Length: 502
Image 1 (cartoon, one colour):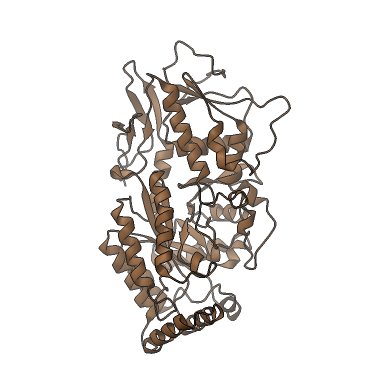
Image 2: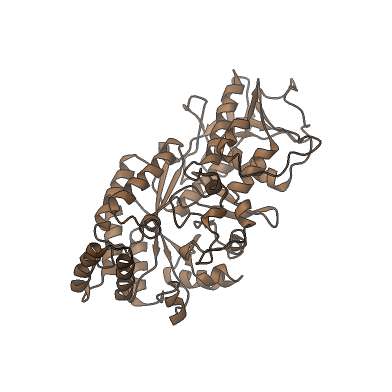
């Protein structure tokens, strides 16, 4: 638990955002300061203040300490200063958090790849060679450790990371890219395999596709994914395309089906019956023009009867910052786009959810960013790895980082990865992945549910600390979740009173 000291000099908007993200990732409970609390340095300690650790943002030197650079990102956590009852974070660290977790550097990038995306090379973590390290989450954990070190006999409280006693979270998602005209996608996949010199694998695909002509392998893939997840108690999030396809969008690999078609309606109904969540898979048009999200979101609502809370861009194609601004304007609560198409890693440097940052307007957006950390096609399409066992090994390597950090793993499995559509062995590999994740006992829920928890956790505050070190908590709790505060040893202490309705 901490008290945040008013800075001696006002924080810039990016610094204020960075501080809020760092504190949120630390899980430390913040004691609300009384009105009129004065700014003070680490050596000051008012006798009438509760004995809690005070967090200071270091005043910048007279010459200024420059703009946050991507170069030192691997050692963000090493610059936090600890004293008795006080912890100080440099403002440069706060700006670096905004540059990385807020995608501030990527928002300023102008380079584009052949799909119109910001290339991975524009990411500061990729540039520094540390994209497989969640450096911002590590800094948040270091802040928590620094507060425990500075506390001495002072009470320390942090919110338990995930509901129901779980210490980490695994969330599966699925992009529904194919519904109709599946033989065309099999033909594309065969061409891809032959171009890689994978003639033997191409022959296996052809052998599986021929007898499937009279069936519906797309539906079989969806049904298989749902059945597998049901066996292991997993519920997931599915992103559906809801624009109007044309010959041009089909050729571009963008919109390939009508969401109102019987095949798409069948998939939507099955997702709802399984208790899974539906989100919008934003077409290329939504990333190019303001207002395109609204029509597609309304279309999905008409089909599903539910308001889509989340969105992920098709091909992960977006204009960082601008597209998120449009998402927020359309009423989405979260965006699940921030992942690399060509590698599995931590694009925002976090294994958690963070608030979206609009660098151009210098303000946070009313939108949560749910980073994508692992995707099946990152290896098969971009790295030429066609062995599903290697995909699963990589997924679990990334998940292990998330588990050890008590964070969030978000994966993407395309339900069209079946033998007839070009991926022999993929369905069995998916079952192995789900089984391996479930064996590590994560909290498993759709992304909408996960963001609800994180919104609640972020809002928890302490309103009082008595002489015995007991803490009074406040926050927008609901009956759907039980919020527990832990002490420095991780033992459960206070519980936030449950109010309202789920």
